[in-house]
Image 1 (cartoon, rainbow, N blue to C red):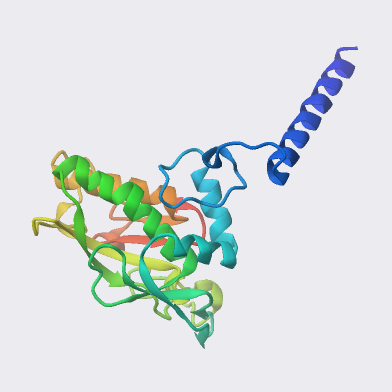
Image 2: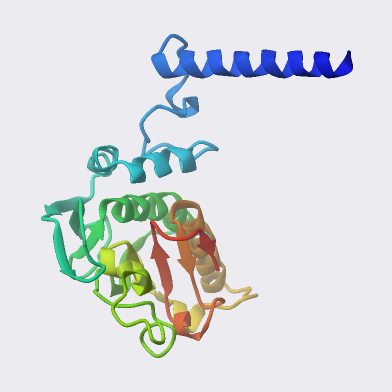
Length: 246
């Protein structure tokens, strides 16, 4: 009897959930956009419990991704799809010229990477700078994005990997960016190499720690100095690979 009751209750909950999902999806039930999982990603809205899901959906669909990217206000231009070698090349990429802060030479990034970069910069990096210094970050120092190369293990590539696609770095598909430091509004420089500390108490270390942790919310993979010596001087940010936050 109890088994039958539990099964009946489970079926009732499933039916209710299915009906609710269908109503939301078709628009029969109107809920605020920020609480609707099928609503487009609002890049300007304060992140909530659905932001990660919406960002993931946008990154997985080129049309959604480009539509969301168009709402960021960043200056960029589409880059023709290209293949530059075994496991190297990109599709639906953009050349980022202006991200609201100085980035030096334009960056070639996949659409998912550019979108994640904006979300991180707006909703994690800048708030961290405001909390600890009361000012914006106006400049970014980086080690580049697209490069047809293998995973760096300290000797430059994965041992014995050759040119197999599975040994390629996410840089090889424009899905990664290495960030070395930041410049504040007053010209003050903060670098990963000099200011990162695992248990730092100064403002620079705290800001870098929050920037790293915030990146884990908006990128698929994040590696920093705590991961290994190869990353002692930069944050490696990527999309499309394995989920990691180190």
